Image (cartoon, rainbow, N blue to C red; front, top):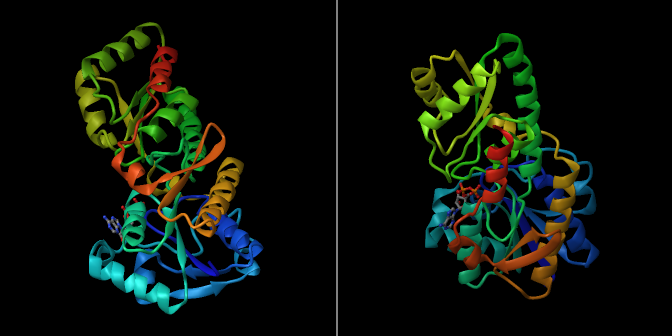
Length: 319
Ligand code: ADP
């Protein structure tokens, strides 16, 4: 391959820029030309494609968001849309594509590969909901944003002796809730992978209250319920005065942590290598600190699995 492309797609995540930088620099290191596709699959269809140089990715490793922009594109779900994308790639002489994004973006990469255009998938999402990797790019940064918020809310919860409910992102996965709840010392963590029992939660909170515990922090994953709805239910069950914080999009932004930058650098570079080795349709990931790759179809077929041992531990430590 003499020329490859790179795009970011779907929800952005901190560390996507570090991944773009790694893709660009690794390609140029191997004397391969690299083209940026701006605006995800929408930009691919419309031909928003420009050559990138070493300097194009200077000064971005520490920045959140993505310099390539991201978009959601309904047209790309259709075969006609995908064909338009392939035509644009061919027109620019591009022979392989690195797709940085989440589950939906991987489906686009799979569709292109199945139509004969080789792609590599790089897991960029704060949700940590992609199989074949223990961590996705942006998850660690999002966790640090959430625990910063939990720590601050804890100060107020302590002063005012209140029960705080913090709603966090994660789509259908409970990883952000679980990891941030454990790291933030939350009393209760609600994840979509496990049904919750209001009687049990209420009785735990009341027992804590009787022991002299005056405040509690409850983390609710957005895939379980809205924080407001859960608060209403909890107030009915306990009569406790509750407050709700919905952290929202702040979780998607910010300067990536060192962990996410290193992860993005390793995975972005590997994605380029795979294309140069002639391997299309692979998704890169990190397992036991080793960079690995899997068939993108297998990844998409698998249900995301949360670390239930960690969940069990969080329950044991929050008695
Ligand atoms: P994420 O990649 O963060 O999961 P989305 O689910 O919104 O985000 O997907 C991003 C984009 O990927 C979509 O807007 C669409 O262009 C493309 N995409 C999603 N699903 C498919 C699919 N089944 N086939 C082709 N392209 C898809």
